[in-house]
Length: 240
Image (cartoon, rainbow, N blue to C red):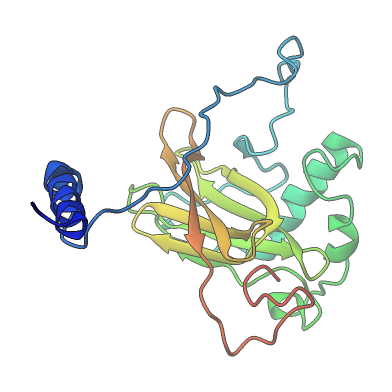
């Protein structure tokens, strides 16, 4: 008769053999308690926002009034006074929204008053140097610039020349510009999120039907370790 120890060992061996199909090379693994899967719960099902009225879409394309037509020989926005374009656009937006902040930050006009007639608006001008880049793929360059409001919030603007020579705003975006990148016909805007480990990336591409830069993709990206930037109050170097 076999001893109880031998019988126990045989039983354990048989149990392991029976469960071998569920083991990997490292042996049996436990996935832990997966919990209970719940279906999504919709909140406030009966409440829906009203559709936007005319002119209530801040990012919609619009002609910039009060600017001279651009010559057909010009390569898009090259040679156009960027500061004059921003002034005309902001002035028109403030007039249209009545200072409500719907189309532009109410402080924008006050900030623009810091710009002088000097080249580039002077040292205190909050309008960023314009960048020329072909975002529409037509061989002509668009103007990309931004008006910094308070050291954190900025008004990002992109302008293009239409076929008739009129200057149009094709993108308006208010936000905390952690980064703005261009590649081919894409413009990506990086902004902080509530999680300091990640930034949101909004990818805009040209929409020929709407004649504007439209959002095509929204993703999350890991915040790079910017060691040369001092830590902020929340201990983050990215979501400043």
